[in-house]
Structures are given as structure tokens and as C-alpha cells.
Length: 277
Ligand code: KMH
Ligand code: ZN
Image 1 (cartoon, protein in one colour):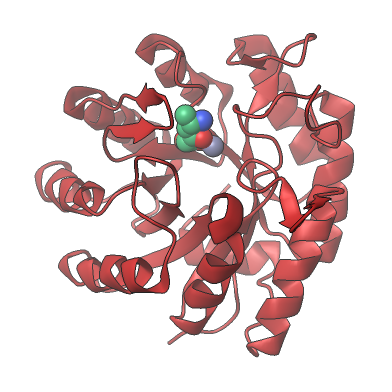
Image 2: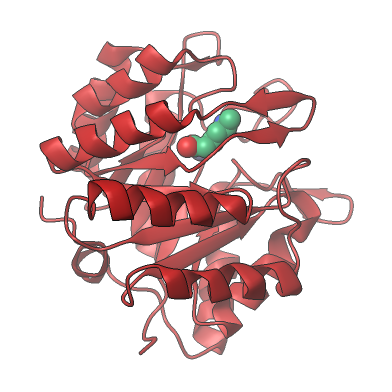
């Protein structure tokens, strides 16, 4: 039964440049302020990419640990580190993200063309991420950029077992140039494929760029959850740059309330996702 809406905020990402998107939170202070304000509005999970002193994406271990600790000190949000990083990050660095001890980490279920780049996720790498997370009690969010990634997830769970926490949660990342389109028809097709996964499997969805609102509405009406944030959306409406992550979270909360599926609290999110920490 669908109850409330899990709202994940993805505030930074690895793709946008601070020079082009000045509202992007790139320092720890900016990230913490964003996290606190988004939590107050109704976000329960934060999907984290960090930047270096020059605002470039980094997987620096010390910074990742400091970020996890600071988010835990300042908020009750479920802390989900990106293991995807940037398309240029080596596998070893992406695996080492888990050493920072987050509640959750992303686990992308296959390779996808990513604009002019390739976001490479070899099968052996996926297995390594999944099993390391199992061993350490880190709950994965399986990132699905294309329908075949759900077939890979079915294979992964069949061969290597359920994730830490025992619950399967996937995130449909739609509208990446090279991945599945951000349309209602595709979201419904992806949801249908969840029938081959454990019955309790839940999904969030996010639409990149101009697919943001169609995907948000489709996910809510299909009983799914929401991911929003400046990782995925830098234009609020035609000709209007996003002013802050809070603006996107507030809009998602408004839609969720209209759908009579109000935001889940952080405690409810932990219960849903199987996060025990
Ligand atoms: N930045 C993308 C290449 C994730 O966080 O796990 C990968 C990404 C997915 O954002
Ligand atoms: Zn990400």
C-alpha cells in the first residue's frame, strides 16, 4: 500500500559548474545549510556528491568522512553517498566511497551513454559494490538509467542475495541523453518490470532537465517516491534558473501534499528503506 512520499534531495551532482550555476552548494557549509533547510521542508534522504576547493567534483576520502559526520551532526537526514561520482572517476575511488561509512550509497546497475560521455558500470564492479555494501551494512539505492538495468538488478539479487537491510529500493533516473526518456509511458514500463523483483520493492524517480515535472507527476500518480535537486534540475521553469534546492524540495512537497501523500519523516524513511543506523 502506498502511503507517504519519500523525498530525496540531490543538491549538487557532479555535472554542473559553479561558475554557470552559482546557487549550487559546493562547500561543506553550503551543503549543510541546504541539508538543514531541505530537511525542514520535508526531505528525508540526501544524495551527496562533494566538490574540492575549486568546486570540482572529488571523491576525496577525508572530505567524504567529514561530510558524513557533519551531516549527521546537523541533520537527521539519511545520508546517501554517490558511488557514481563523475564519469571520469576510477572504479577504485568509487568503491572507496563506502569507507566513509554512509547510511546508504548509490549503486548504478549498468553502463549508459551520458551525453557526450559514457557512465561505465561493469558487471564485476556492480557485484563488488553490492557485496561490499552487504558486508558493511550500507543500504544501496539501485540507480536505473535504462530498462535493461532492472534486468541486471534481478540477476544481481538472484545470484548474490538481498541488500543490507533486506529491502530493495530503486531510483529511476530518467531523461539523461543516452538513457531512458523521462516520460509517463517509460515510467510505467519501468514500474511493470519491478514485478520481477521482490514484492516489497519501492521506487523513486527523477527526471533530468525538462523531464523533471512530467516524471515527478507520473511517479506520484503511480505510487512512487521522488528525488529532486540541482543535480538533476537547474531550470525551474522556462527562462527561470533554479534559485535553490529548497525551491525544488518545496515544489515536490506541494505536489506530494496535493496527491494526499505527504512527505515521510526521516524516521519513516529509515523504516521504509531498512536503514538501521
Ligand atoms: N554523475 C553521474 C555520472 C550516482 O550518483 O550514483 C553518476 C551519478 C549517479 O550521479
Ligand atoms: Zn548522483
